[in-house]
Length: 590
Image (tube, rainbow, N blue to C red; front, side, top):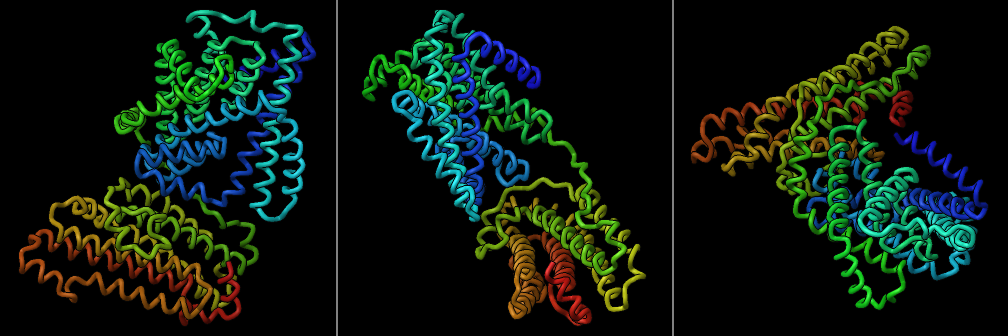
């Protein structure tokens, strides 16, 4: 569909340029404007240094926070598409909830109206080309700096410069065009005109792939008297529908969560458009009243269009914010998550490397770390935690108590597709060069194989543990809930400490952290600590809870022991690893 629309656009552009030479300024203006928006988007990616991603991950736990983040981030970045890309990736990785994602993209609909205000206040009233050229000059200079932040500023300046330059070209183009062609003759009164121009706005946005460009084009046409005020309003409504249509089309081949968000955005913008069109003439009167309050002139159509664009998006946001929970429930029923069939592929096992046995050994070590990283994901989910919530944190006890959401995960499927398959690949790969290794390196390869086995067994031991954590996390009995939180905490602290060992370059620090791992094992021994006796004697838990707790403590003990063994092989210097000497030092640097 999009491909055919692009062909139609090219044909229309060729015809337009053929019949009227002045139209080339409008076409060039739109192109330069879109290039500017892309430069700004790339610039903010470089300049933010991950700040935006961290904000989105941490500021979407409530509807109000996510909506506010969507408004402010989009208003500053001037790129709802960048926000949508980050939100979709976080949603797919289950870092944020569907409700949080919807809040952000709903808020971005209001944030993107900032473009309309910039164009209506500066673009049609000020010689923006005077600002554009210095921005482009300094933008080009900054792009040659080595620092990413400076390069980001350069891209932002280039983007702003091109945006202003594009507005200038569009403005001049419409001024010249009206001398030969009066587009106002195609204006239409009544609801027929509203419907037609709404469709025009939607199609234009789908083709151009930028509602901001559509709005900039509309405002400059309105300011030069080429279209009627009401028709411009209809185009603004259509542009909103166009952005949602683009998102929906793109998500149809994506995963269930992306489809949910895209359809949710389409419902939001579609319903907002319908309500706006039905009440259009009432909203026109409201815009006139607000314009008087804001001191906007009666004939300042560009500014009044900016008020209208913000108003109807804000009305839609306020209404839909209350329905996000119900919309989430509907979307989850509409798109059911498919069973994960993805088979994890090795990243480092290259058969061409087998000819150099030591290089193959290094590749095997890297792949073992890759296997461990995947295992920590399933282990974290099994204890109802996300890794980004506790890795690198000092308040893991608090994080565990606050993390009460149940994470639905089929451990058997994960084990078959993400653990066992990669484990098998590592074992198979190692058979091709094991006989070419000297004795010391062959011992280390056996250790790596053992580490892979320990990783696989650690994952298998979490199956019963996951079921009971899920059961007792929502229990009314606070004593059994506390005990399972102890288990969760010990496992989380173990994986966090191993992560610190993995990233540490200080051998003394590594050894001190290795001692900490033993403490986590001690905390799980409910018999030695006497906790189980107190719980049973004082009837705080029943007999069934007690035996289940004993079994799960044992499972957790096994998991931690396995993880410690893996850490010893991969990162902690024990006697068997030290035998590698200088080769081991080379391995550690990978």
